[in-house]
Length: 210
Length: 210
DNA sequence: TAGTTTATTAAACAATCGTTTAAAAGCAGA
DNA sequence: TCTGCTTTTAAACGATTGTTTAATAAACTA
Image (spheres, rainbow over the protein chains, first blue to last red):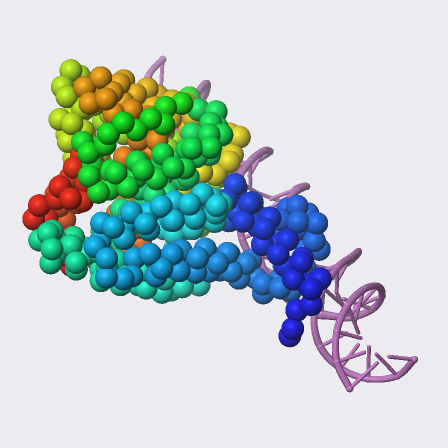
């Protein structure tokens, strides 16, 4: 079964609106008819291209994980010192999260939920990422600084820090009107990097007020 | 409408199993019939006590927010230095998260989702917490250290750090079998506190391997 | 152009959803 | 025991769910 150009177009249209809707309303709370209408696509096309609703979710998760995993390979692997690599990685990861806010929200909100079809799949990615964190951060850190941390603790901690602003964004923007600041991303990256490496006491002269 | 003891019992039974199911499968993915069966309660009792499914969710969110907000009032308010208060607060918050893992997961996974009935409600709590963070952390930090951070950035960041392990727990435990370590909570608290205040470079001799 | 594959459509499928109803049961105080 | 209130029950409500089917349209290939 080969896809033609027109087919790819509608397939992308489905994925794009699915990402937006799943992030806004949640995966389970989003109906396929609503999705089909929003994407201006016939209802049956979703099952035609993705087999099932969960197949569509898997496709979305896969895209996000692939991009994130590639970022880890690219910036965390290598002989440099962990602190140096972390600086680079955090900058690119935050940027990636910003460009894929909805995908990030879907991943984080669906992560804890048990679903036999999806769980095994998520575990596969988790394993892959834990290995990198262990080999590139935990082990070197132990050898050079004597600091012993587990990858299954420091990994999620780092992800949570980098994604915090984006996960809370929908509710924050109802409290604090969206800043629309050009420099926000840089400031946020500096803050996360600074705190992760040197803590609150190591911060000097950040200004992201507003 | 006054509740009798028997009524309170079944009401609690509904809430308890709802917390477990909502955390495990997600709010929208959990059916009321499944919940009623699990709680060994008649289906109609849910609407009888909580008005609607969303009413039940609100009740759960409210309990969690009330407890967390109380913790902020208790340990963040006061004349002590921010660093000192933060140490105390983080310890108690992590403990609270551990004792209410399922409630925490429900809050975090439902947070980003748009729902007119719930959004306004969540915003009310968010506002309340932001005020405390601003007055007790951001402002003092600015005056003493010159460090300028926004409460809508540092607040979510701190929450994300403290909750990271619990949010990722379900998927991590499929990769790394649950440790069941008595001392884990203390180690985790020390790690979060240490990184938040002094960063990765400030850590000395943590061991939570396994 | 004929033949084959891919894309799209409207309609129907059975199942489940949250909610409501009206009647029965349980339980209090008088 | 009777009265008024709370709790519980079974049944049905209409709406919506994800999925499938069979037929048609469109696109590509030889």
